Amino acid sequence: MNGIQPLHLLLKALGLFVLANLLFALWNPPVGRLSVYNLLFPGRERFPFGAGVADSNITVDDLDAMFTVHIISAPKRADELRVVILGDSSVWGSLLHADQTLAAQLNKSPITCAGKTLRFYNLGFPHPSVLQDLLIMQAAMQYQPDMIVWIIAPNSLRPKTLNPFLTSNLEQVRALVREYRLRQRLPRPQPETFFEQTIVGQRSHLARLLLLQSLAVLWAATGVDIPPVDDHPKLSNDLPSSLALGALMPPANIRRLLLLDHLEAGTRLSAGVPILFVNQPMFIGTGNNSDRRYNAMFPRWAYDQYRRIIARQAGTHQWAYLDLWNVVPPEDFTDYELHLSARGEERMAEAMQAAVQQVACP
Picture (cartoon, rainbow, N blue to C red):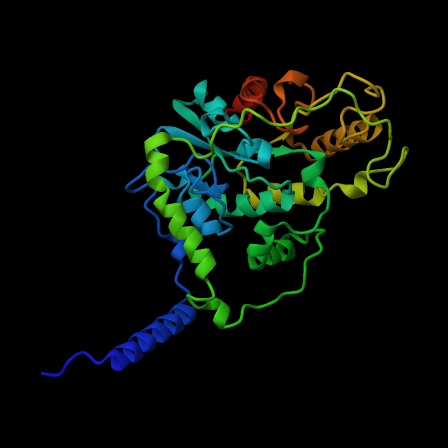
């Protein structure tokens, strides 16, 4: 009887490993669509974004994986009207628990229409970018939304370099920019090498996806996806004296800084699904230099001009538009001029209810 030959065993294992990598690269399996969420465990209330095992969250940039673990991937109920909310970290809910976000606050006071209940889905992601919102909107259309609420602000409308999420989905971004002829500069394409498509080349991505699936147990047990954050920097009521917005000084025209064509593209991409555009609340300082600036981000002249431009755009195109810029008092903001506390989110939800119902139930 022959014993085990370590060298032959090692060579066979190495051969199988190489074969598995080759097949993986050639097949390019949709691993992001494999999930225990919405099957063995409840779906997440918002997209995964976090540090990892310390909480029950981790950041992934795979669009398929982001949606597959989200509760929107569960079958649509017969008695619901789906309303997706797009936006940045203020919509996602920075420093807030999943049950304190804008979508959660709107779900706490049910809005009905023709015997169905509006169900709000948090599709915010923590980068300010209307291009990012468009990409998420495009992916969300397969989940049969009945209405879209698009939360906007000057930060999300300003041209900027691509964030890591958009860079990771560059092929889809290029197609979107090309189809809607968007005013957007993109980096030159850098196709993946064959090695980068193998299991070894994808090891970091695959490890994140695996960790995200393992965190389903923690999410199901606690309903918490980020730990509580009570200690954070407070916003100052005293503001800088400068009137500058970047390199611009009054009376400069800021229209060229706003990607209005992206909003127009969204109305076409939605294919008849109604959109409510909402100018989000912001922190308004009341201390030194508050006669010159609303806050550290925006001088009064520039922000007032932004509001006029958006209102005119909405009127020209007959968009449903709601301007909530000043509905939340300063004490209901957290660490950033656009980040709301749980009470701030509640105030915003209350201010939106009538407009949402009017658009959903014309």
